[in-house]
Image (cartoon, rainbow, N blue to C red):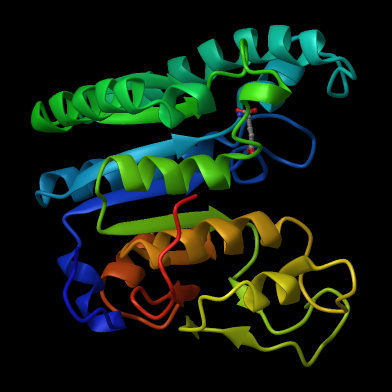
Length: 274
Ligand code: GLU
């Protein structure tokens, strides 16, 4: 845990979980954004060279599977999505393996389901595996095990998964990369005067209502799960930043203490056992 977290102490984070979503990994036409993945993997390799420990939580299995199979759209059935994820996850890891190997960085695939991280013994096994990988300077690449995950054992979304991974690995910092600059006081697509909130210290659920509550005029699509994950992380003492992943080099700005994205400051809310 970083002591007395302020922007200018984020650079002290030794263990960092970075989450990237499908929209950041693909173009609007559904094809893989190799340029962005190239930049992201280079930054991660560089952080590893600095002595940081990085865990990547990456979505994209279903999106890339849809593209590879030329389906045009996500299958409507659960089994259809599971099958597509089985195809896409392999390709996703193949792409990561290629980019990371350019800098001789070894990566590992870790696929999780909620029942595994919920059970005391199985969670401990997961933690042990992470510790071994991190100790060997490997970058674990985590996704939900979409091929077997059905509603009953689902995390729901990879933002929540990234919070769980941050907790299990005792990370200092969670960075959620998305396609918007951070958390706004109201929906920036609707309101030109929407203000980007740089620092959140109120870790109550009120902040989630503003991010996408049904009765709220505020918030943006997809922001709710990010705010939820960031709030929970901060409640558990992990600094969390939601930032625009268009240029993955923004991670340097975050670690340099620059005022980019939205920082959820740990230590200001009540404890939570989610
Ligand atoms: N696990 C899903 C995938 O890789 C993504 C889930 C999410 O992004 O919330 O396609």
